[in-house]
Amino acid sequence: MKNLSSILKVLLSLALGIGAMIWFWNSMSVEDQNQTIFAFKRANYFWVILAPIIGFLANFVRTQRWRLLLRPVGYNPQYTNTFYSVMTMYFFNLFVPRLGEVMRCSILAKYENVPVEKSIGTMVTERVLDILCLGIVFVIVFLFLGQENYDILKANFNERTSGFGNGAIFQILKFSIPALIIIGGGIFSIIYIKKNGLNKLLDLFNDKIGSLFKSIFSVKDVAEKPQFIILTIGMWLLYLVMFYINYLALPETSDLPLFSALVCLLFGSFAVIITPGGIGVYPIVIQMVLATFKVEPSIGLAIGMIAWCVQTVGVLLGGIISLVLLNLTNRNISNSSVNTH
Image 1 (cartoon, one colour):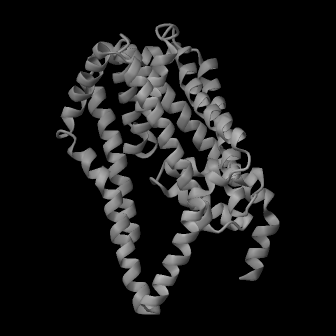
Image 2 (tube, rainbow, N blue to C red; image 1 turned 90 degrees about the vertical axis):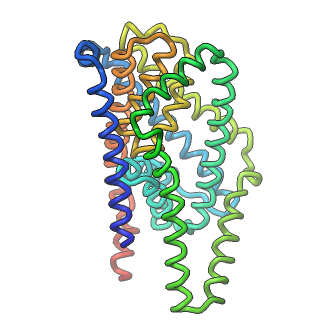
Image 3 (tube, helix red, strand yellow; image 1 turned 45 degrees about the horizontal axis):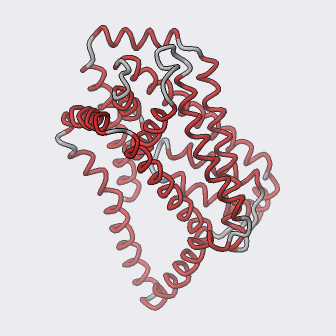
């Protein structure tokens, strides 16, 4: 049943993304479609290839920041294994939402002996910090966007999302994950109580949740606070540069202001939540944002698709290479695990 619900959730997300892309493409005029294809053909792929390299640098920074969060809870995992776990997180999230977070913590548990509840706690801290940073970006965007551009952006989104039943599908996706977590937690609790008793379940929750919350608040105990702050700011600046570099691939977008890339970064971050890796939705969102800055629809869609394609290819290659290197560099651990069983 659990596997079936996971499969259905993935299929629903993929269907939404692919359906959105097909619907959006068909809503464009033939001329705009041809211009989009032509934009792909004449793009400067030096900048296109440079963008995911900047993304890799951002992941190097994220890796070190996570290691700083793990130290206060008593663990200092190797940089390489931690980096591989971060890369595999993005890889698995392309296929199943939130699976990457599970794999990321499982890898550290297997190869670095970091208890899952502790790595999950620090990962939650990371997510909270990312949401805080995204909130700062949100404030900056709407302080400097201007009322006229805000109205144009709002009108673009209302027009495009009206074709999806006034957002009904998005609302279903929004509440399906929390509902599945609650249902899954309830089923687990019932089975565990029947097998071990209520007191054992309460002891388990007290132990795991206590460890989890201790890890969540590990940020206050980080010894290298200046380094932590610099890494956080640097990581988000790299994300911004990574997207802006795509502009340089086409002459029509090469003179766009850096602020427009910040707006794309903000709304693009929400797009990857709706479908796995933002499939189908990400290019549409970027096109709608760039329309606010007077970019032709075909060019805006082309930049969105270029940015999404190179990010996705980078994640796929990085994830596959990381999985291979993870096993090659940890053969002794893998072999001892097999021998134990």
